[in-house]
Structures are given as structure tokens and as C-alpha cells.
Image (cartoon, rainbow, N blue to C red; front, side):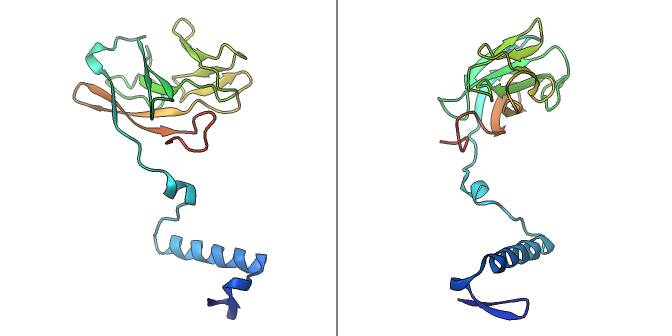
Length: 174
């Protein structure tokens, strides 16, 4: 196939690296200028997350934690109703959050310590703040815990997606 790049005809089967970069950059710029989304191949390959009921809102008291698996049975997660408002929290006080419990350092399961209001990994003591988007406070981990997106419909708290990559995976949906 022959296309025109910067006024020159180029055979796509014989593109140089420079021509390839120019062509893809120009294409992305054209799509952006036209208002069309430019999605990565990985984003196109990810199927939609399932919607899963986790717990009834009325059953959750401040400080309660409920374990569940999301987005599949091999992905342990924890829903917590904190005693404070949380970044990205849902519910009446924006105090309900959920995270993958696989530590981003080596995949050990973290535990919620309500007296410290932190998620702590027993393997290397990485500590995460559930009120601040699961951000790492101290330890060997280099990134926040993947956050489970939540929604509330009626009295039911539902998991609807994941922000961040679950430890040990190249995609969250297997």
C-alpha cells in the first residue's frame, strides 16, 4: 500500500523507522483534532468489568470490612467502611472503599488494621492508606493498591471495575 507522508509517496511495506513514527504521530494528531478517541491496543483488548454485589449498605457499620473476590474468583479484595471520608469513597459519608488485597510489592495478601486505619502487608510491611486511594505510606511497594470501583444502587454496594493492575497480571480480566 502506498501513502503520502509530508508530500512524499511511501510504500508501507518498506517504511523506515522515521517514516513509521511520522505516520503514526500524524494519524493520532488527526484523530485527536477530529475529536475521536485514540485508544491503545491494550485498552481495546480489555473486556468490560462485571458488576458484582458485595454487601448491603445497611449491614455495614463504620470500621467493618468485608472480603470478596473481584473481578474473578482468583482476585481477593476487601471492602471497608471507614470511620472517615475517603478519597474516591462512596456511600452517605463517602467512607466506603475497596481494594485488591494483593500487595503491589510481591503479591502477599494485605490485612486491614482498624486500630491503625491502614492496610498492612505481613511479608515486608508495606503499608497502604485506604482513605487516600490505597496509596503507599511506607515499605517496599512502589505503587498504590489497585482500587475496586464501587457504586451503590438502593441498599446494595456493587463492584464495577478496577483502577490499577492487580499484582501478577498483565490484565485484570482473565
